[in-house]
Length: 188
Image 1 (cartoon, rainbow, N blue to C red):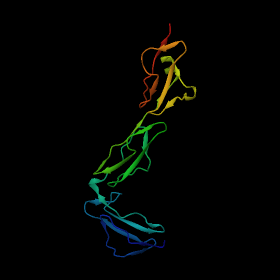
Image 2 (cartoon, rainbow, N blue to C red):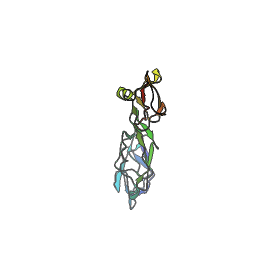
Image 3 (tube, rainbow, N blue to C red):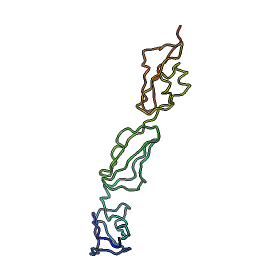
Image 4 (cartoon, rainbow, N blue to C red):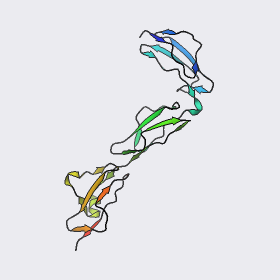
């Protein structure tokens, strides 16, 4: 592309009345009163490049913008963080490996506030010490994993010569890093 068509201005104006711009032409623009662009400027310029304009000349109500999205434990946003976000813009979160996302992975900037952020639920760890302490073993040999995502189930059984101490279920569920382990006692 060797030229650029006049861009559409959003809450901004320019004194330049041209409809076509040559390669490397600069176009100055100014935001309407009470508005600013994503760089927190009220005045800026864009350049006509081979692939079109260097940026979009859009401004938004600075009182309705959002700052950086809130951090979440064991997770992060999937895009490069900005210092300011225009109203209605959104970001997406993802959790670290084995952590389970709870809630909406996408949050949106509305009236200067972010919508509710998601949470990353912790996985459960099954150690030899825990198995020994409760006198249990995995019921299924092929399912002997040490880490389980929140929401996943694991079934245990008592070690040989032991029986269930209470009426606890042997089928357990991992909930945000916690498992209620059944306990077995020595048979008489």
